[in-house]
Image (cartoon, rainbow, N blue to C red; front, side):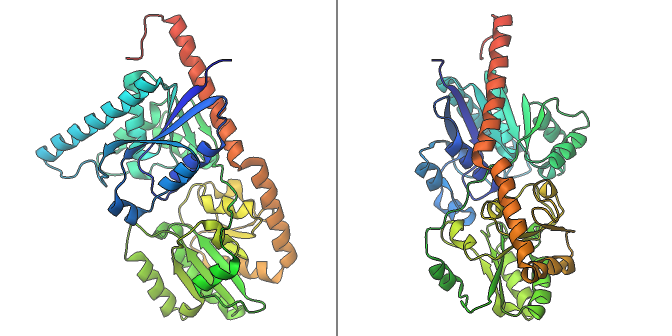
Length: 413
């Protein structure tokens, strides 16, 4: 029996986010008879950092995933001070971190480095090139690189890996256009998302959110990070229209708020100004998201910018009827009138009309939810994603072996 291929996933930290969710789903679904998998975080555990950004560290450990870190304190910016001394200090930190990562790759005989997004992509790619190890970079958009002095670096990072992985066709095409010369192996592998499982009875979760359980009450929810580009303000404006026609409705805007502490109170103030504060709940939930999903009658996702949101896939896995916006790769996952209703972004009227239609046409809501579930089973389960990634990693490792046979003098550095 041939030895297992060794895959090292590199991620910036273990806070709440799409990259962390994707890596965890892959780690759970990987074929452990054929692959040996470990995850290395650039930054180590820090209580204050975790309190601000959240942590999925325990989820990885519960899944029996081997976790490593480089022993570095979390840094929000690698270049802390734009001065000669700051540049020298940052260069020293970067060199040290790349060296540590390269040492792990060599010591473990890693076959493929799987670098996840932005900062981790930079370090994973540098260490992969240093050690001669095939490297993949997963990226969803170029926004991070559209900053002063960053565009050239971004084009290098996204052009140099052996494979560039995107979660949607739209984002792959967008990135390739941004690169000018398209990456020769830019592949689309959608996120594989596990079906959310509740751990508490629905009645307890209702009490947590202070929701009345009266006959005919409906719950509309957006499950996402509490950041402006998720379009919560548009959902609140839609909520006012919905409540005028269906007053026995609650709106849940549930997610982790870590980037801008003023955003949540601003949303609460907007809900109050719209006169709907008593029917809206905004904030996080101290437990698995499956607890929240069991309350949801209609999933509304109001993003004005996105790629392939985890929450939409979760809703599909639970056959929840959805009203979503036409941004990023969402229309590749949700087909209008077949697996959900797709409306234009920043259009509260269309969003409200879609939600009300789900209320008024329960058969339509049921049909769309069941079709969404079927699509999830076919293309968005963790096992589907894992098999695609495994095939890519196997191909890259085989190519590396062939190149060594052709050039026997080469080494891993």
